[in-house]
Structure formats: structure tokens, C-alpha cells
Image 1 (tube, rainbow, N blue to C red):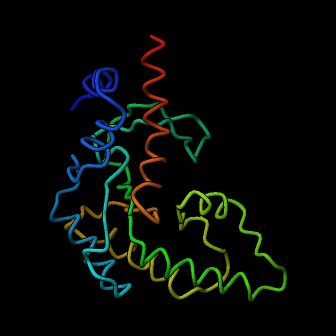
Image 2: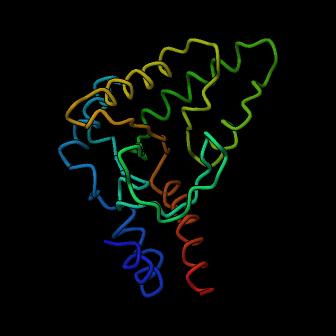
Length: 199
């Protein structure tokens, strides 16, 4: 699918159809089903949860071959445009829906929060995402060792080093359930629809 074909689909098809058939489908342009199964297996073994409890959705430009969201460049603060192509520098971004892993990490972070001298733990951006049913690992507490949180990063460092995955940087966000991910994906999709309708 090209960006032009996607733009046409978001005008003619319903929001739910685009979410179900395109954004939340198993297919991804740059990540095979076998590669997805390897990622699921790695998470299952590291956290000792059933592999069928892990729903993995490829997101971002690795999914469609292009991104549907604008993004700020961390190097120079410029805005990377919507519909930019997947490139050799692109990460593989994952949305992982797994209630057991979510609860493992949430419980560890909750215990950490109770252990610090000031209560509640000033979680800053982490809490902003958690209230939406999303654990953002890049907002884990800094300068503290939390075993399960470290397991998460160890898994993704391992996956990013694998030749079978192209030795490409792989990052994942963890969602409590599919509804939380659908709501999040709907925001970016509605932005695209509104832009196209204004043309």
C-alpha cells in the first residue's frame, strides 16, 4: 500500500475498518510473521508467561512502509513529516498487548513507588501514559535497578542484536488490552482523516 492508497482508504472506509484491516492486522511490510513469533517467544520465555497471552502488533513505518504520524527529531528538534518512508535508520516499533506482563511490571513499579521516601513516586510522563493503559519503558525510573524492568530492556537489546531481525533497533510499548491500543491508534488515524478532508 502506498501513502496515496492509504489516504484514499481513510476517506472511503470506516474508522473501524481501517483499524481492524490495516493498522491492527498481523501483516507488516518490514517484519515477517516468523520474526514476530521470535519476538513473542523471547518475551514469553523472559517473563514466564504463555506465548498465546502475547498479542504483538507492528506499528509505525515498519507496519505500512511509511509513518502516519509526525515526529520530532531528537537530534535537531525538527519535525519529521507524516507519510515518511521506512528507511535504513528506522526503528521497528511494536505495540505489545499482554495483561500478564503488564501486571508484572506494574506490580514492580508499584512496590518501588511505596519504597521511596516521598509518596507517591513522582512518575512524571510515565504516569501520564499509565492512566491511558500504556506502559512506556523509556519512562521507567532512572538510576534504579528494578529486575523486571531490566528484563524488559535486556529482551529488546537482545532482539535488536539478532541478525534474523536485521540488527535493527527494536522498541516496544506495552498495553493492558487491545481497546487501549485501538484508542491510541485512533488518534493518529483521525488526524490523517481530518487533514485529508480539509484538502
